Image (cartoon, rainbow, N blue to C red; front, side):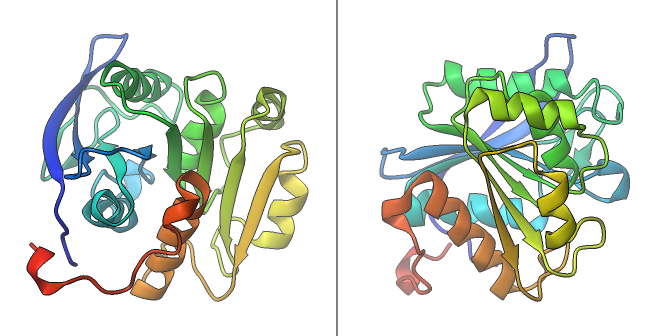
Length: 235
């Protein structure tokens, strides 16, 4: 639960269909941004929101430990302590405007080396809507492949942009062996099977695996992350 130093700003994203989405931008206090994560949270109808624990811990740690900027936001109709985004949950379809708004915000703010980081439902949004956006690639945590279809995977393949998927050994929806088969159309996919892990990445061991894998992809010179920090920097 450690919160490390960063410049944290409450933000509002405005979608092309007129909605306001609440969120947060966490920037490195150093002023140097090596990469930018645009995070897409798990299913809001099952408790997912911008504060889902892996995304929250990414925002608490990565700006300080790896000079990575982290954008978190609530998709349409989703609530968290930050507030409630306008609109209603739309099964991943209307959320295309939410993903676009987040990427456009990052571009407008001049945040470099933008990556989509989706978790569960968030991976569906990344796969369905992200290939044509101004991002360098995508990182998928626990992809269920329930909404994303073969055409979406083929579209990402045609883009040539790198995609990494972390698939838990004991995932409730899609485990590594099946994932390798179903992701076959996405020819450049780097699939990482994570032993003993489950869909929700509960426990510090698995959070650390996830964050190290993210940093290894977007800012490899900062991986692996340190496991200790001086007490004076803990907020």
